[in-house]
Length: 98
Ligand SMILES: [Ca+2]
Image: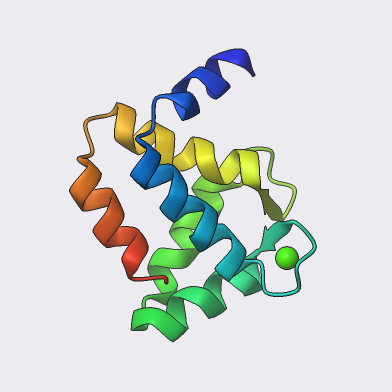
């Protein structure tokens, strides 16, 4: 868990800010977690990319609880960033949802 937080802490302020906004946007019913349906709705509204959303969801939901917490959500993107994803690419990916 601590390693997970350290990875999230490495995200740039710009990415963190965008992630906060995207999480709020996806959490349609405001219960603090993102369900599969909410993620699908957010992505489909954005660009008709439902299959990609399902793939994202399954990877993000690390404990397979059927919902994505803020921690899981941040960690997902932190791993992409850590694996060499550029700030620009991540921001433009997130812009598709917003
Ligand atoms: Ca929700």
